[in-house]
Length: 184
Image (tube, rainbow, N blue to C red; front, top):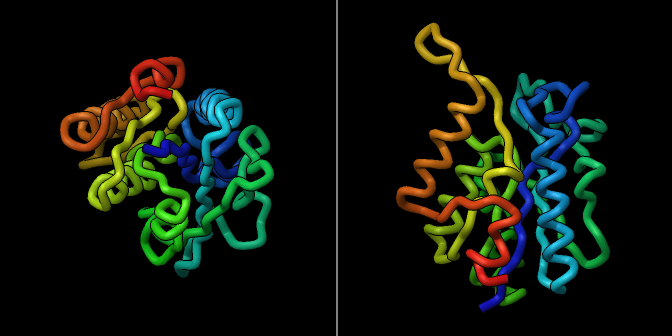
């Protein structure tokens, strides 16, 4: 059983000064960097996913801009593959599935941004494709959302989506819990 780390959309536009700053992105990326360190120390595979927005009217993750680059805290290392996507689901119209299967991966520890969008879509798709997943709650971040004239704070958005994933798709844990709970 091969376990890999999947880092989704840890990109500059989600950080202070970016075009779509998330709540807690620096803290989440610091924890993602710790997960990255754990996988590198154990010689386990790491896959990075980055989003490029091709849809008309997009305001962030624009191709060729610094905002679309992977954040310096989690830059890919030698041999770590980078998949570029154009939709929230990391598997849609990418070669991620083929790359994971070629590496013999059957389990994924997943971290990234935004919890309520690309992280959620990626985890659900991975489980539907037969992967066992764990979601790293402290290595993920999101933003406030608006619904029916109300602002839903990022902490509530994050918690609601993680609770939904945990209910039917994947255990949710911190980076520090990962080695013992996910058998690293």
